[in-house]
Image 1 (tube, rainbow, N blue to C red):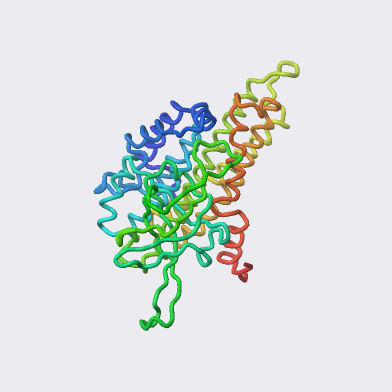
Image 2: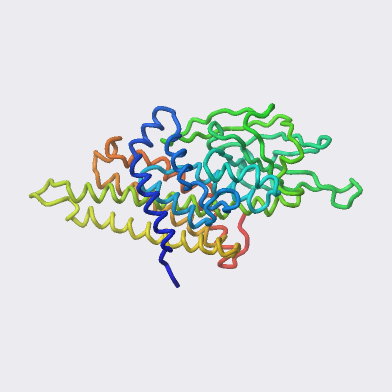
Length: 392
């Protein structure tokens, strides 16, 4: 089993690391506190091809896979710039359109994903249903040659930065061809963020981030026929699942990068801070052991992340689903531990903005909840790995 990156992947990692460090956590925090977006970093990363590493070359991308995109997510986060839109736009939306969109949709959207000029966010979660697509209340109904969408979505990231939102809705399907028996099937629609009938309300979050969260309201949003992803409604369910494994893997990579960043900051501080008898505080096991423990947990999470990415890129979707969920769980726990431990190692300084670790507390805490909670991952593992009866 080869755990080494290829030469090209190592070069990508080094290049993204250098880009991220030129901006750094201070840039990230300043943008967040000013209510601005990381526009400059996104544009430069797109111009260098880092946002399109998983897009096929025929559409202007790098021709790589989720492994390459995970590298980009991890290294920017390790530089103190965890960009959530990397997950929702290149990882989820681009993957869905590439794998299940029509050729016309691929030609229309993928070049923009590849160079970063297009951002498409993802809307599945609802106030009542959460992420349970079996109970989604957002519905799409046919209207002549087009569609009308109605419903509500919540915790939708980056709508104010995006050109389109990929909306998961349910469509009534005639099972027996008579119109007498219908069921609702999931379908995905590409909706312009300036569409008539689509409104948004910003959510106030206790997370320091330049990327905002929104409630979305769809009130008979009229869409053309080609807004439906794929050739028919039948593409909806596989398209939906196509985006979930890349989401888990890239979120996990972002968490691992954040954990690395926090441990690096705390280790540097502990090695240089001298209080008792001229020895560094890091020479005391009460400081060094918690940091070492956090570093072990982050590295274990990284191993599962790249295993999941390799399985996904090899087309082994079922195995990637298990590994991706485990990676997301491990990374969420490791990132939260790393940031908390880094704050503690700094003492009172850890709670200041200057030292750049407490600024990540909200984000890593949210990483144990979203995009899928640790409890739902444990349910998944208990059922699908351990063979236990479904508990929910």
